[in-house]
Amino acid sequence: MSTPAPLTLNQRIRGDIEARILSGEWPPGYRVPNEHALMAQYGCSRMTVNKVLSALAETGLIQRRRRAGSFVARPHPHMEQVALEIPDIPVEVASRGHRYGFELLERKCRKPARALPQEVEVAGGHTVLSLRSLHLADGRPFALEERVINPVAVPEALGMDFSCTVPGSWLLQHVPWTRAQHRISAINADATQAQRLQVATGTACLVIDRQTWRGEAAITYVRQVFLGEAYDLIARFSPGGR
Amino acid sequence: MSTPAPLTLNQRIRGDIEARILSGEWPPGYRVPNEHALMAQYGCSRMTVNKVLSALAETGLIQRRRRAGSFVARPHPHMEQVALEIPDIPVEVASRGHRYGFELLERKCRKPARALPQEVEVAGGHTVLSLRSLHLADGRPFALEERVINPVAVPEALGMDFSCTVPGSWLLQHVPWTRAQHRISAINADATQAQRLQVATGTACLVIDRQTWRGEAAITYVRQVFLGEAYDLIARFSPGGR
DNA sequence: TAGTGGTCTAGACCACGCT
DNA sequence: GCGTGGTCTAGACCACTAC
Image (cartoon, rainbow over all chains, first blue to last red; front, top):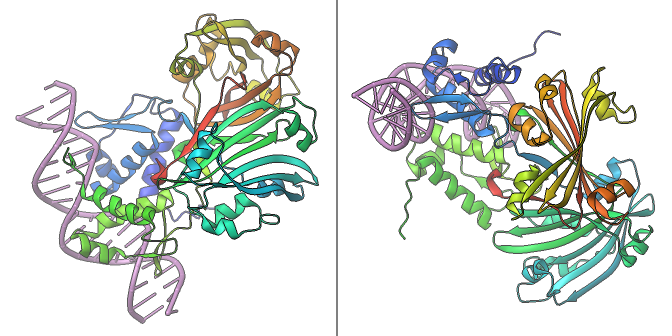
């Protein structure tokens, strides 16, 4: 029950300072002791306290200004971002205790829809590999997915039979991406969507539009339509950035 | 047009390595030169290259293993999180080029709804300050907000007249929080919600449930209901964590 | 067991920006 | 001007683990 703590000096100092800030002992605007003072207090070198304070500044807990000193930050700047988990649907379904199923509705190569700039970008002047599919949980519709893939960036995709392979999971595992953008919105299911999801027309659905890039090349664009009542996204924020 | 680059040595080395990884010159699994080699290559001390490699490891671009070396990471682990901007509604409305307006519909102290565990937690055995309000863009309904505040954690709130002060913005600026959780879902507007938002009953709405804590104390719980077609959330991921 | 990363030291010079 | 943080050096000892 005793501390099994082989904490590094760095972690001890960081923990000390974080605790003072989070407990309110050092309120927003409070001037943190400077590096020289902390160095003396902990009997360590300046590099060590500098590393701690730099790390705290990166996470936004303190602000550092030359000549002025380090100050406990006001709570909101910067913390306006929270971590949103990207859902991998098979994993998501399994973690909810359901049996996952997949059904490929359509697979073809076609021209991009000119009305969808994302598709045009993925096409890059060529055709796109278009996949329309349905994700199932315990045999019942869970999400509808419309995806286009850039066959120039991902030539292996042309040789894949996606009737048994989930395109999203396959792409995640085989194609490295460096940038992604997600747009989250809500729509009323139209007649086609409602029929495929086996709900009434007009049912509220959560929509995720995701586009990924590798360097400058667009890899894929996907629109996933979830039943609004059966699905939700969770985003969290905890102190220290992690 | 020339490089105005007063880059630090640290940034140069980090940029070099990131470029090689992102360009694919160093593919996933590639063994990055060890610290001694980089030290020689750049003619610098070990601390300098160590700081670079540690930073790259923190962002997930490389993995480091004692005795084995540093390796370019496979793309997906860890990158399953993206940064989601928390919307501050007045700012959000203004940034979309609209005039922001606010209307307090109801303000009272009451018992928490037993069916809502979030309200019970915010209450902590006491009553909650309950606020129901409407956010407007160019005078038209933009979002409906139902909020409860813990009056023990935020006693100043009891003295506030929120008819002119936006509760969310006020809380953000006056109450530091250390933890937050968001749940995003989609609903069909019920009759009351539809009337207040001036849309047809059943219109799809994007819902954000947000709860914040300071330490172990729950501060506030809020449900914001947005028009699904008029609003969306954007989440991005870029390399290097930022 | 030897090579690798993890951590730390005791200095140093410099740039910035309050005062 | 001068105190602060920003960066870097040339070492050091240790822990871990793959070989």
